[in-house]
Amino acid sequence: MANTKKTDDRQSNSIIVRSLSWVDDRKKVDRFFWGLVVFGVILAALDLFYYKKTYFDIEHFPGFYALYGFFMCAALVIAAKAMRIVLMRDEKYYTPHDVESEEHPELDLDRKDADV
View 1: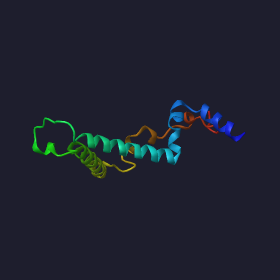
View 2: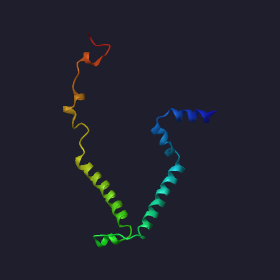
View 3: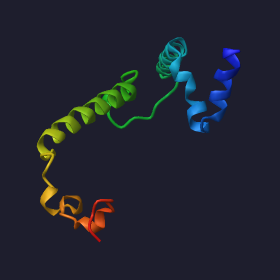
View 4: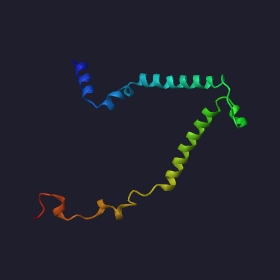
């Protein structure tokens, strides 16, 4: 009886929730992760078996573009964290000029105790 209720709840969810529900199962996430690792190793191994026309000597290194992409992605994350420190503003930075910080007359607030 409990199983039918669980499937009914899943059917009532949106299509995005139903398509991503596999993420709740740890075994499926682990399987997906190791599948990506195997796929990456296969692609890196295939990099050894074809001719590459390169312009720089470093491009002859096997797996150069995979390593370059990984380190550039990591560098972007580190740069974004550093930029966050520099660019981050105080929580009340925009408050003096924000519409939400204005005082509203009692009549505009739709309160029941306001005098009409």
